[in-house]
Length: 443
Ligand code: IFM
Image (cartoon, rainbow, N blue to C red; front, top):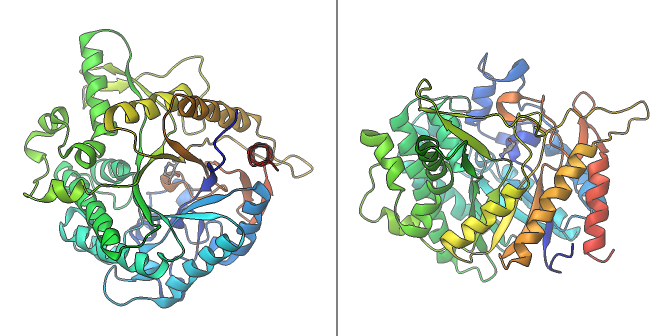
């Protein structure tokens, strides 16, 4: 497997999942801070108060990245560290944290990719409706513009939103994530305003004329396959495919929401103002794809949305209950290219949680994760071989961290984190990935 010379070899994280100290140095509370402090929301009552203490240990963490041989690192900025109430006065101490981090990465030869929104909306904005308020698109674009101005000289890869589908579905429709809302109308509005915020942020970047800046969005995608050839199974699988894979990409690349989904949600469909689709469709430079698994779907009238996912007996599943299905990575990369054209792609997340534990010598052997990464890289390589413009791979995650509603119970990291002591240890998969990267980079 030989990858292109300029391929980005990375790992990814997100602010609330690793930083800890969410209120330090004048930062404003986020919806995740508030949500995780609400009893009954997170497994074991875990919070991101300490997380991986990356806020204080970022230099050590860059050393670990160097040991891994990464030439890229994707992380997110906590909006509320920069603008404690979401808009208005800038908190320079928060900004300085990210400036130091970026400078540290660049000094280590690691290309930063910044995600502007990885789910931690400033809580004060939620009090005004959050993403369900149309103004949130503007608040986001203003914050994004500030970040481009402050860091655009050094950071050339920007992602606006991480997985807006998950925010819409888990945050506003099913309520398992912050802000914990269960309201289909609010969900549809939130989805539309995130798209609008994305488009406005892209326009803001273009307006600054930064010559090297590249901007895109990160979406969670995966094959949604019918459990059988029956017309009902095909119908529900298509509906899920349109809902998960097309709902955010069709507006960006085609200027419209998928009809089948709009028909399904009927009166709750988002209100689209005349210029919205033009803003949303402002051309982007790349698409980030987060790929984890597929869903095999059967029609089931007894279920609330008329379908259920069918567990694939005999296949390996991760601790998240997600089937390991590497072929799906190739399928989705090909689908994106065939459907939306040859836009540069990054795999911005791909990874697996397994029940890792240190042995008596303190080593963490995780052969299942080694197999997982290898198998997915094979599919990534296959895609490149077939002419798909894939430019980089970011493993999720650099280190074990706060897995949202599952707290610290799921370990995705290349680095094992002892959450009691904050000691990091390289897992076997980290060593394997480091050797693989060294082989690719001629090390
Ligand atoms: O931990 C998350 C991440 O924040 C977004 N993508 C999926 C990961 C694993 O669930």
